[in-house]
Image 1 (cartoon, rainbow, N blue to C red):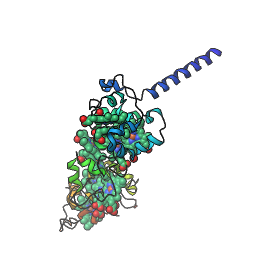
Image 2: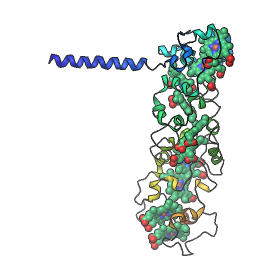
Image 3: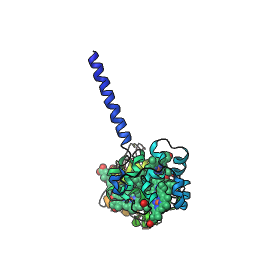
Image 4: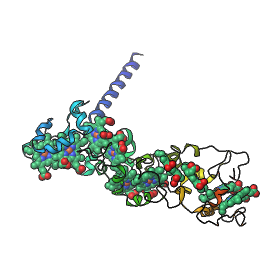
Length: 301
Ligand code: HEC
Ligand code: HEC
Ligand code: HEC
Ligand code: HEC
Ligand code: HEC
Ligand code: HEC
Ligand code: HEC
Ligand code: HEC
Ligand code: HEC
Ligand code: HEC
């Protein structure tokens, strides 16, 4: 009995040691990132930096990091202030030069000392990380350029478009989600830090993302249109389209991608496509997303 207890305590102690170990090891090994840091110590006083970098210090002091680290640092890492991101600077202050610079990728490791949690859960496997995009490709932390999120440009889509020009083109189309109007952002649907789903989407599937705002399309319906269950993207281009309602094909052609020879299609009475830009099939098949009407099996009610 006593032995069992001792064993337990032992495990507990080991557990604590491991925990403390990881807590401390969150700080990067500066000399490993850049050998020029060997033997350098922390200055821990941004007034020293201000002597030569007054503009940088002034702009930085207004950012969330600047305010928090100066007045409300919650741990030793935060209290390092400038040096939490720039490493121990004693050697730099004694002989200033630019030999202590970091690459974008190294900065990501530095940011992750404090930001491994939350939205960054899937960072390591994200297309951005594997595509060699760093935190500082999207974030500018030395100055408050955006209303929130310390972005490198004043608004989020502008940050994304600097690399995703094709998406900018899609968002210019006549039917589009109101990103251009500022009512939504790319991060309404994507987590730029990575996600468990594909395409860095915020849901496990495309549909889960869409349902977060278009709940009424979730169903379940008495009569399901299997193609809707399978994916909204079968008929809609989420980024934009020159057809109404973000549709990926015009009027009847949308449905005829799959139903060309089915049912009544060849009967002129039903093929009301006299106005080729009109809605054609959905004039009658008004519940194409699914129907709850007892006789809605053909999505006509
Ligand atoms: C005596 C003047 C002086 C002081 C004090 C000083 N610096 Fe510098 N710093 C410089 C000079 C000069 C450069 C090189 C500029 C260049 O060549 O681009 C520089 C460059 C930098 C850079 C950009 C290059 C790099 O190493 O990443 C950073 C960041 C930096 N300093 C941070 C700091 C911090 C943090 C402090 C306070 C702990 C500080 N400096 C104190 C003069 C100084
Ligand atoms: C949250 C991390 C972080 C903190 C804290 C921070 N910096 Fe920086 N700093 C950066 C990054 C990242 C860059 C590189 C800019 C880039 O590539 O976009 C940078 C760039 C600089 C530069 C180069 C010139 C410039 O403005 O771009 C200087 C000088 C500098 N920092 C000084 C400081 C000083 C002084 C402090 C404290 C008063 C400080 N930094 C605090 C991350 C930080
Ligand atoms: C020493 C710890 C630490 C380091 C290093 C650090 N941060 Fe932060 N960061 C914080 C804390 C603490 C907050 C504010 C807490 C919060 O609101 O979650 C914050 C907030 C932020 C925010 C939100 C700010 C806002 O105004 O909405 C962004 C974006 C951010 N950090 C990016 C970065 C990037 C990019 C780097 C690396 C260049 C970095 N951080 C390095 C601790 C750190
Ligand atoms: C592809 C662009 C991009 C990259 C790369 C990126 N971010 Fe972000 N980040 C954003 C956007 C967009 C937001 C949302 C801004 C807002 O609040 O509107 C954001 C928000 C944040 C926030 C504040 C909200 C939150 O999730 O806590 C933090 C902290 C943050 N990023 C840290 C990081 C760190 C650390 C890295 C690198 C490991 C990183 N980011 C890489 C685009 C990016
Ligand atoms: C309404 C939701 C939504 C919004 C808003 C949105 N996206 Fe997407 N995005 C998607 C979907 C859905 C996909 C397809 C994902 C898949 O099937 O892999 C996608 C795919 C992508 C891709 C992969 C390439 C491609 O075109 O398939 C990129 C890059 C992308 N989005 C960038 C952006 C950018 C940048 C913004 C902001 C300007 C943005 N997205 C806004 C839903 C959205
Ligand atoms: C510095 C350049 C850069 C910036 C800025 C950038 N991206 Fe990317 N993005 C990439 C690269 C590189 C990839 C990976 C290669 C690829 O698939 O094109 C990628 C991939 C993606 C993908 C996944 C594509 C897929 O095929 O699954 C999405 C979604 C995406 N980015 C959205 C965004 C959003 C949203 C923003 C703004 C918050 C943004 N990106 C900002 C460079 C960038
Ligand atoms: C963050 C909320 C949000 C998400 C997520 C979202 N939407 Fe939307 N959607 C909107 C808003 C807002 C509108 C514009 C409504 C308006 O203008 O009345 C809209 C409009 C639409 C329209 C009509 C477009 C038009 O031209 O009127 C379609 C179709 C649509 N969304 C499909 C989708 C699909 C498919 C997805 C998933 C890939 C999706 N939405 C994800 C918010 C969202
Ligand atoms: C079989 C093709 C098809 C699929 C799949 C599909 N839609 Fe639609 N959707 C349409 C058509 C056609 C319209 C235009 C309806 C009209 O003009 O009356 C439309 C219109 C919309 C609209 C705007 C009008 C409205 O009803 O609110 C939204 C939002 C929308 N769809 C969301 C979704 C979502 C979310 C999904 C996935 C769950 C989805 N759609 C899947 C064909 C489809
Ligand atoms: C991507 C392929 C695809 C597209 C596009 C599509 N459907 Fe379907 N549709 C299906 C499939 C698959 C079924 C189920 C067929 C079955 O059960 O025999 C179906 C079933 C139907 C049914 C019920 C058929 C029956 O036999 O009970 C109707 C009505 C229908 N679709 C109308 C439409 C209309 C209207 C559109 C355009 C708004 C459309 N579909 C677009 C694939 C599609
Ligand atoms: C004038 C109204 C009307 C128009 C327009 C119309 N449909 Fe129909 N459709 C119906 C009705 C009513 C039924 C049910 C017929 C029945 O039960 O025999 C039906 C049945 C169907 C079926 C199921 C056929 C079966 O074998 O049970 C499909 C698939 C279909 N329509 C697709 C389309 C497509 C695709 C278009 C556009 C090219 C279209 N419909 C245009 C009224 C219409």
